Image (tube, rainbow, N blue to C red; front, side, top):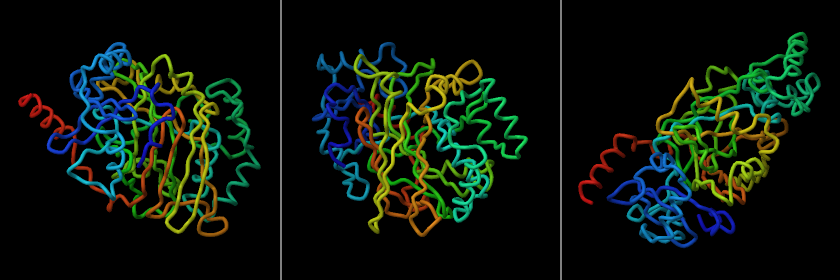
Length: 390
């Protein structure tokens, strides 16, 4: 990894993250183009930091006043974040979140909604996808973006599709009143920049999902954003929606990072709504796939999704990271005509946008990626040790 992980002109970006500090454990940091700054005087965890009132202002004041010390050089930590070439005796960047719940909104873009319907109709069989795609589009079209979820128009459309035998559980959450919100991963389990991401070894049809991820505190206030890869097993979910947990939550199947950009006068939800994500997959055999996902094409506003995930019916006392979904649904043939896209081990996945930088990971299988062994208990022990020795 190199400086391209940082947003261009990042001197205006207020970036926070975590590093693994050998003999210490995770350390909450602020990131500048040149230095990694220890935010421990302000907060010990990312969750605690995001609970602060006017958090961006507090962090900026801390940095400008010199209250936080530099603990490493940013280029060196970025270079050491590549898992395959990592020196375990030196620090590296981790996923920027820690104790927060990791949630995801699904079927929030028309393109991906249609692909979910196709997965369902194809029963998870990639070889049938193209024929099913043509049949589905012939019946329901591909212009559902104008339909407002939960509106009277969407209810009428539902009745038409029911009459034609084409209603789907994915259309229900795509244009119905209730968004699909699910648990993507457990707190502390996300992998960060340079780490390997895991595909279940039994999956034959899978894909990356490049997404914006919002960071919200326990009060439901969205205070920052980052990038995420909601790694997905299309065959598992296509066989049955009840396999969503197995399709989504496996070892190393959730990547978040490289850093959380805090909202301030330079960057906020209006800028998030205009983000366009670029995706590039570079295969070990020379295969290249590129695509994009424009958040202004989303069918539900990000704040609506946050409100459906967290509120009087569901609280998250440590805050929440929320994946907003993707419009990117890969159909580029990789292994033969009509086979579409699926990952192979060794793929390098790059997700980027100028506002948030680049998240780069290499694909492995979930049983070969490093096992998740450092959880909440380990973090609490390391934090207690640091407080005793400080």
